[in-house]
Image 1 (cartoon, rainbow, N blue to C red):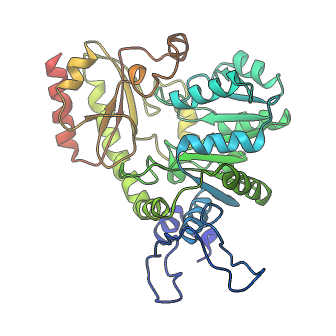
Image 2: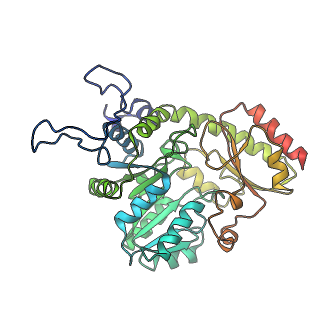
Length: 383
């Protein structure tokens, strides 16, 4: 299959299929072997040790690269390890990383700690504030990380504009595309050098896998990332690679239903007197509403809102929306960012990013919409 000929939905379904020449298996087998024999002295095979390369992981990496239109991919043990791989491979202690001031709490914590250890320099900037962004870019960063829509306030960054400005300063640009997936957004086409995913989320889609990936625009960077992934020992294992491929096959279908349910949830929340603000790019009042329409092919299935009432009482009254971290699974989840996903950010950073104690974040799942709305009704009735 030549992936350049097909829509991402088709690539996701067909990745790795019909490659078994021994038995003709349609679905690729799992290769759990940690090591592979040399047919004779001094002549290794394509794979010699699974930390460096595994046939199943190769298939998953090829599929992910094709989905994003990249030259290659490094599949890692988690989304954070993917970011760490990118940092280790590209940056030295004197290099500056610019990251969003409202990025995922785990990313913020990791970058801050790496900076404290003297391994990199980091600066957090508001990409929707011209003064803040210009100040960061004027400091000659080596790597600029974009997260759009942001987690959890769904701020949208102009990928093409930021990438162009960063390149003028000599920086590489990486975009975290976890919320959109390649079905709804293609950062490499908009000028980025790398795309990062927490594959744990929508790409797998079933809340039963931890994995991440970095997709590179060039073969040179693909080789560099593969080298460093082997050096620091963070590639995904054979079973995780298989599980991810299994999830990818339904990606486009799942995303379509996530989108439909999210639209109806947003419309429902607009009618609730106890909702003081909705954070979703589909809202006409959203500051980057028009940008989202141009840059994304959907507004996304992550919805945050501020509650006029006790969040604990609201959450405890729910039965279908599970109180849990993570997102992107078939089931609907609700999180309280300030005490859960962004607890790793100090309070001053949360406040600066606009993450308030009244904020709740929904990952809208695939249940029947009537049942989801009835569940939210119970929460609002309780407060």
